[in-house]
Amino acid sequence: MATPANAPAAAAGSASRGKPTKTREYPLMSRRQVEGLIAQGRVVTIIDQFVVKLDGWLAYHPGGDKAIQHMVGRDATDEVTVLHSPEAKAQMTRYRIGRIEGHWRNFVPPIQGGKFRTLDEDSPDVDDAEDDETLRFFGASSPSDVSSREASPVFDTADNNIRRRHGAASVSSATSATDDAHDDKDMDGTAFLDSETRKQIRLDLDKYPTLDEETQGQIVHKYRLLDERIKVEGLYDCDYRAYAIEVIRYTLLFSGMLTFLRWGWYFLSAACLGCFWHQLVFTAHDAGHMGITHNFHVDTCIGIFIADFMGGLSIGWWKRNHNVHHIVTNSPEHDPDIEHLPFFAVSHRFLGNLTSSYYERVMEYDLAAKFFLSLQSYLYYPIMLFGRFNLYRLSWDHLIMGRGPKKGIAWWHRWLEVAGQVFFWAWFGYGIVYKSIPTNWDRFVFVIVSHMFQAPLHVQITLSHFAMSTADLGPHESFPQKMLRTTMDVDCPTWLDFFHGGLQFQVVHHMYPRIPRHNLRKTQRLIQEFCNDVGIPYALYGFVDGNKDVIGRLAEVSRQAAILAKCQKVAADHIQGGHRH
Image (cartoon, rainbow, N blue to C red; front, side):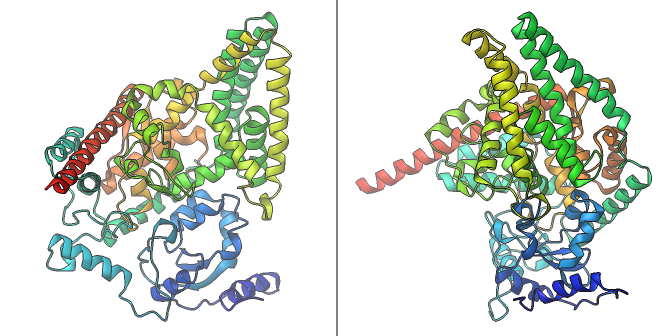
C-alpha cells in the first residue's frame, strides 16, 4: 500500500504514461517539513529546487546506497548533475514530492551524525541550537559575528570568527601548531586531537572563500555556467580516435607478455603484464564514469570486461566505493579512499578510533596501527608495491557478500562479474602462472613482479588526495569548493599523459567526472580560469613535489601520533600521582 508520501511519486509515474501529459504542480514544502520526513527515516534530498524522496530507489541505485545517504537533507543538485547522465537525472523526476523556494540550507545527513526532529517535536531548531553553542564557545555577541559554517557532528570547535586572508597558509605554520600543542604538558589525548582539528579548520577558513550563503551561492552559480560552457565547447564528447591508440598500446603490451613468456623470459613477461594492467585500469575508470559511450549498459560492460575478465578486479566494488569518494572526498569518517588503517593515516583524526560510515565499523587505533603509522612515511612506497592484492580482497568481499544492487537495471552485474572472475583466474592463474611457467620459484617471481609493476598506479591514485585537506567545514561548503580544497592536479608534459591516464587531472575530474579522459587537459584551462574568478586556490604540483607533499603529510601524522602518545602518558602519570596523594 502506498503511503501518503509515496502517493505523489506514484501519481507522477502514472501521469507520465497517460496522453496528453500535464505539468505536475508540486506543493511548496518548508525546511521543517523536510526535516520531519527525514526524522521518520525517509531518504529525502533536494534536486533542482524540488524535494525528492528516494526511499523506493535506494535498493535500485547502480552506484550503491551509501552515495544517496550522504545527500539526505542536502541540496544534491550539483552532485547529481555531474555524476549522472541527463537520462538518469530525468528518471529522478518520478520521485518528486514537493518544491522549495529560495536558498536551501543544508542539514548534516543522518549517516554523518545529523539529528532531526519529527513534526510533533517542540525542541529548538537544530541550526539555532548549534549556533547558540558556537556563540557561547567563542563569546560572540551576535550571530553575525560567526561564520555560517554548520557545526560538525564530530567536532564543533572551529573558530568561526576567522576571515579569509589572501595567500595560502604555509606548511610550517601547521608544523609549528603541532609543536605548540607539544609544549602544553597538561593536554590530554582528546584535547590534543581537538586542538589539531581546530587548527586545520582555521587554516582552511583562512585560505578559502568564506562559507556565507552569498559567497558560496556565487561559486555554485559560476560553476554551473562553466558546465554549460564545457558542453557548448564539446568537451563531453568522446574522441574515439584516442581510444584506438589506447587499444594499440594494450595489444602491444599483452603481445609482449605472451612473447616473452614463450621465450622463457619470465621477468620481462611479468613486466609487460604489469604495464598492461596499469594502462588498462585507466579505461576501466573511464567506463565506470560513463565517459566512453555515455551509455550506462555499454560502458558498464566495457568496465566489467576490462576490470573483471582481464584484471581480476570488481568494477562493481569500484563504483560503490568511488561514488562515495566523489561525494565526501577526503572525509576521514566517510571516504573509503583514505581509510587505510592500520597501514596509513593521512589525518590526526584517525588516531581517535573513528567509526567508518562506509565500512560500518570502528577503525581501531591499536598496537598494529601505532607501529605502522610510526613508520608510514618510510613504508609508503614498499606497501604500494603490494596494493593490488588488497584490491583482490575488496573485490571478492563485494561480490561474495552481494554488496552491490540486487534489483533494478544493474541486478545482473554481479553475476557477469562473477563469470569474469572465473575467466580471469582461468587464463591468468591456471593458463599463465600454472601451465606456462615450469617452476614454483619462477611462478612466484612472475606473480610478484607483475603485481609490483602496479605500484606507480597506486601512487598516482593516492597522490591526488593524501596531501590535501581532510578538515570538515560543514554542510554549507559548496560542492566545487570542497572538490578544489581536497584534490590536487599533477603537472606533466602532454607527451606523458598516457602514463598518468587522466589521474594527473583529478581536480578537473572531480569537478566534472563524466568528461572523457582525453578532454581533461583542454578543460583544465577553464577550471583554472574559474578558480581565478571565484578566488579558490588551484592545487597544481609536479609529480616529484606532489610525492614530497604526500611523504610530508605522512611524516606529520607520525609526529602527531608521537605527541599524542606523550600526552596520554602525561595524563596517565597525573592520574597515578593523584591516586598516591
